[in-house]
Structures are given as C-alpha cells and as structure tokens.
Length: 319
Ligand code: NAD
Ligand code: SER
Image (cartoon, rainbow, N blue to C red; front, side, top):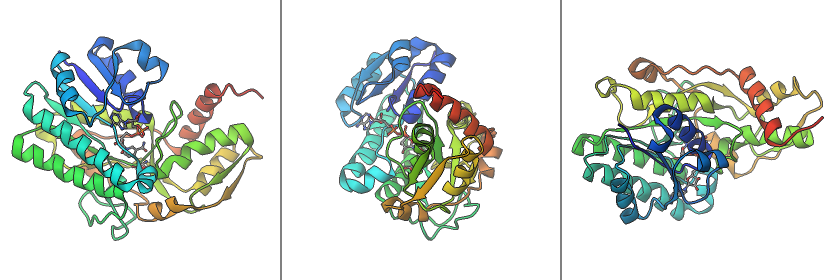
C-alpha cells in the first residue's frame, strides 16, 4: 500500500496532481500539504495539512505519522518571482529540496521521490533548437541555478545513498484551474483570461519569444508515468528533458483569434523577456520516450479549445 505526500499541493501542478493521484491510489492515501490553503476539491477530497517544507522537524514527524512511502516535492519559487528576491528563492528552492532528500535518505519506508526540474537549467550558451538531454548548461537566473544545483543533488543522493529520486525538466505548463505561480511562461495562461474578460492582452514577452510548452494533463501523465516506471529502465537521475509543442505569443494569439476574431494583443516586454531569451525554443526528448515511454497528446489547437472552455467555466463567462 502506498501513502503519498505532496508538498506544494495548492499550486498550479500540485492541485491537479493531487486529484489524479487520489483517483489512482485512494483519496485517504494521498496527503496534500502546502503553506497556503488548497482549492476546494483538494481540501474536500482527502487529507490536507498546512506545512512548511523548510521545517525539517515537522516534515519528519509528518512522514512517520502517516507512513509515507512516496513524496512529490513541488514547492518552489518560480523564475519571475525568484528574480525579485534571489536569496529567498535560493533558500526555499535549495533547502526545501535538501530537506526532502535527506528525509528520504533517513526514512527507509520512503521508496521514491519526485522533484521537478525545468527548462530553466539551460542558459544562453545552450543550443536553443532541439535542445539535447546532455548539453552546455550555464543558467543565468537564480531559478535556473537552483534547478541545476537541484539536479546535481538528486543525482548525488541517488548514487551515494540510493535514494530513488526522479525528475523531469518541465517546459511551460498550461492550465486554468489555479493561478500560475509567477513564471516566465505564465503569459500563455494569462492571455486566455484576458482574452475572455477584456478581448485584449498586453504580453510581457516579445511576439517572437518562442518557448517549449505542455498542457497540464500531459505533464501530470508524464510525472506519474516516470514515477511508475521500472527503476532499472531509467538512465537519467538528474532531470529528463520533455518537450511537447513550441509556440510564440504571436502564434498563440493567432490561434485564439480563430475563436475570438476581435482579440487584440500588444507587446510590452519586461525583465521576463531576458529570462526567455536564455531558454530553449524546442526540446529533444527522445531519451524520455525511450526510457519510460513519454508521449504527449495535446497540440496547440486542442490546448486552445480546452483552455477556452475551462476558463469560460472558471470566470462564469456569459456572452
Ligand atoms: P506554484 O507556485 O503554482 O506552486 C508551488 C506551491 O508551493 C504553492 O502552492 C506554494 O504555496 C507552495 N510553497 C511555496 N513555498 C513553500 C514552502 N516553504 N513550504 C510548502 N509549500 C510551499 O508552482 P507550480 O507551477 O505548481 O510548480 C511546481 C513545481 O514545478 C516547482 O518546483 C516549479 O519550479 C516546477 N515547474 C513548474 C513549471 C510550470 O510551468 N508551472 C515549469 C517547470 C517547473
Ligand atoms: N514555467 C516555469 C517558469 O516560467 C519554467 O520553469 O518559471
């Protein structure tokens, strides 16, 4: 029997991952935790506790009390917000991960840990098209530096202490259930809300800022797919590249315009444009496909269709 702990369960990924894992493993076996309250479905469908990942003593009590066997550690400060408070972001991103890895090393019952990395591990000197699994990695943001250091720690704990930690370098993730957490790819979510509420959007990236993206249900399936894969088939213990699709704000706006013909977009790039310029434009994910059968489903047209419907519901859109 598995007892799963999710740290950061109130966030963009955690809130959807919790619900999927509860369906799979039973609602009472998936323990959601976060610093802030979760959305109603997470709170009402199973156990939730307010918990700070920086509090290592409470963390160990929690894990022992609930006989935790797997941890998904999602709490972090994302790229845009991290640039505003670099030292605080570094502490949360690094110390939080080290608390979880150390816990998994000490508590034998914890069989597996998932921790997300990001395309932010790459930097301006990385080849930007079809970015390989193994390549130059010189990130120039505090978020990217913390993710790269995190990957190194994960690999270290795997080899040195046999902690079965698994990781994915997520691209920008698109969903409508919760507000995104302050990342550079968040424009691709905000745009839907603004298009439906106001018919226009001011984008903080340039029109040609093409980035790799993925629909949330593909990201959740990938995460669980990696966690369920046989350990013997996994050749990467830092972070697996996963791609999906790549598009620019201009291309996304054109697709939205097919449904809202009057939709207009302006461009007012801010500090996040510089972050985007250091990231890949597309990702080579053949190692993930080979090792654990990664296969995303959603293309841009499908994402726009589902996002439009989801955001309309969320904002009680009437026209
Ligand atoms: P998010 O900001 O929406 O959620 C993170 C959650 O962590 C929040 O609910 C926050 O309250 C919680 N949290 C923050 N500090 C905490 C602490 N000290 N203790 C406990 N909880 C704390 O972020 P997300 O988009 O869901 O991202 C989750 C993970 O995935 C992060 O590691 C992020 O770097 C990674 N990731 C996300 C994306 C994306 O596009 N969303 C892409 C690449 C990687
Ligand atoms: N979507 C994330 C961000 O923009 C990438 O890690 O921060």
